[in-house]
Amino acid sequence: METYKEPHKHKMKRFVLFAFLGVIMAIAAVPVGSAAGQFIAGNGTASVLSAPIQPNYALGLLNGTSTALPIASTGNLTTISNDYSFIGKNATGANVTYTGEYPSDMLLSNATMLELTEHNVNAIKMTVSAAGNVSVTLGYGSLLHNTSYRFTPLMIKTSSTATTHNINFAVSAADFTGNGSSVLMYRISLTNASSNPTYKVSVSAIGISNSAPWYTSSVDVAYVFAGTLLIVFGVLALPFHDLSISRMSTAVQKSARHMSKPSMNTYRSSKPAPKRSTTGKKRGGK
Amino acid sequence: MMATVMYTYRKVSRRMSVGAAILATFLILIEMAVLFAKPTVSFDGSTYYVGQGIAAFAILMGGLFWAITEMFTRAGRGFWTLAARFGFSFVIGAIFGGIIGALVHFGRLVIIPASAGNALAGFLLFAYLFLFGCIITTAAYLHGLNSTGKMKGGKQ
Image (cartoon, rainbow over all chains, first blue to last red; front, top):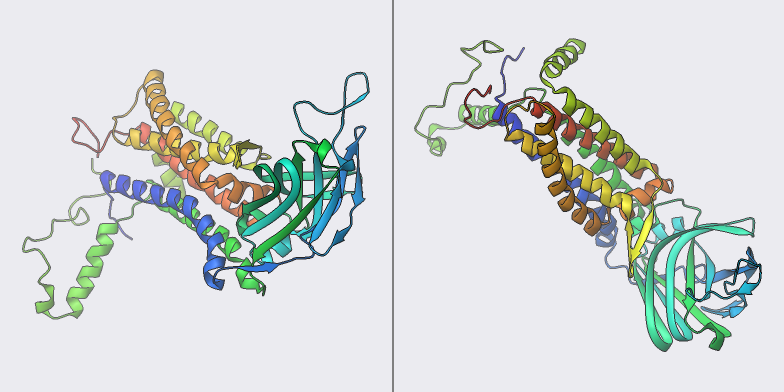
């Protein structure tokens, strides 16, 4: 049984070392893991999921109820009629358009989170042909019984006055590691919806065309790797048990000295090593 | 194994301050609530922030700074010693940690996937809570100990 008692100062050094290592691991592991798929597969520059990424459903909110309406999509271009604009109700029940908010359309695609992670999608590019300002909220969610929906926003981009808006979203694989059956959704807001009775939307996703399982799992590997290391670092940081890193290095030096020739030990200091507390003192001190 | 655990528990519980232990327990509860609650999102322009991701890192770094403060101070006695040490160091650490949490998008990368059903991201959250528990328990333990420096009467 080891009777070595680690000094308090060494325990504090060990605590600081492993606590900061844990913080660094919590910061860095998942971004590195989500980027690792790109590193493994080279740059993902292929256009993937060209059919399911298009808007296939529009959700209109009329008179306080929401109904899902299928919309026509020819090729990669989808024409959306502005009939699905959001219209609110005032206190007396009459329909009004919001003055503070602009009319917006909620569009659903057929691309699921699982497909997006399988292809390691790192960019989603949208082209919206409409006059005025356009604001697009990218997110994911699901349609519930064609009457209501669940929407979690991911990011918002706004394009200033133009007739054709190119809006690019830089996404990472970790953005899509949620519920695999949720689909990608777009919420499009137009400044002057009255001058745009219809507008056109085209979406393309940039990723890796051949989907192999180990491209996609790099983020999940990072979760497991970082989680295991956080637990290990937490145990190593605790000062309640004795552990000596300097004694380990001494043991390594001793074994190296034992195995090698004397001429190889010139790096050693000429001073004798300080005595450890294992030999003389008893545990507990006083 | 059991004897070692009981020995460690007796040794630690003899030295640990009661107030610091209560504070550590409440901090662990708050961190657990922050990590496993339903995330709330907010937008700053086109950037997307999860409030829980910022708060989780702020609490973690605040606890780490509190532990480092307790490392360099002698054994605390009374309420105001604990309040002053904890207050100042936790606020300074929380400012740093909040900046880190906002910059690295911890909430977007871990908390949102975990709440959406990714069990491996949930495992990372459990490990994060474990690391926080280790750090904050150490801080509470060090509150009852003298510093490592050459202070008179310090028990090394």
